[in-house]
Image (tube, rainbow, N blue to C red; front, side, top):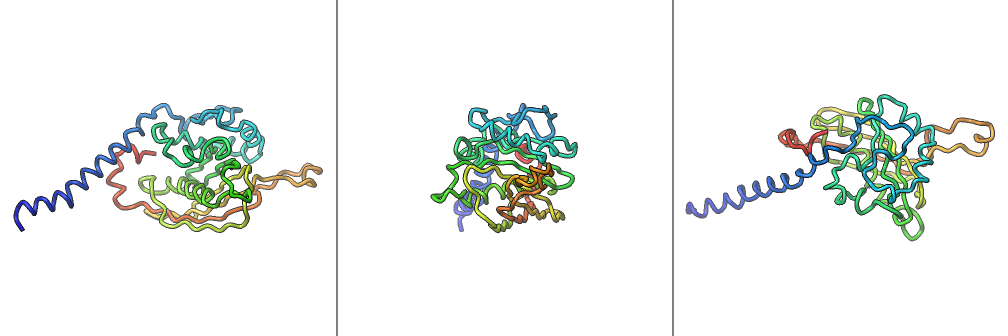
Length: 258
């Protein structure tokens, strides 16, 4: 092999891919530090204002659903828990990337995800609770919400729950298993609950559910019983989250900050 051929091979196999990867990473992360004014999980709470952390226009969200959620004992107990940090989904995604995020871009707005998902995370306990409202445009011809949408919500929610348990606080889904117990009707408010069941090194296992909102039956309302802690379960899920070894070499990048 001539020297020219050798250098051409090295250029194609090593130099160009490395330069391309570096340029891609630099382009992607450029927007993340720019969101310095974003309200994050650790910011102080403003009592009584539902959706206060949202970076999405209120005109695209259903205020009646937000008010309904705010009256729930579950919501109120989460807001009062000092170990739980609260945010909206949009507050954790820089504006320059928000339109490319499926749940904040293509699937967000009237008829789709009709509120900015309300996120409650207890990092120490490894628990997360997220409120969603699933609009009519997310359903099939029978008026049931597409299972692909539910899979996306569970994948995102369980990963976000497990990220704090990984060394670099970031990872990728190695396995996502789903069991659909029953269909979800369109125009429904649901709650995702998840908990880390196992965490060791660069591996984390999270189990969670998508549930109906806890509701008292007519008898419970009649006698003044407290609502149940959990609603009917729609989907059960288990996620195995892993952190690739090479993630540690990128800990200095803003894209991997908490």
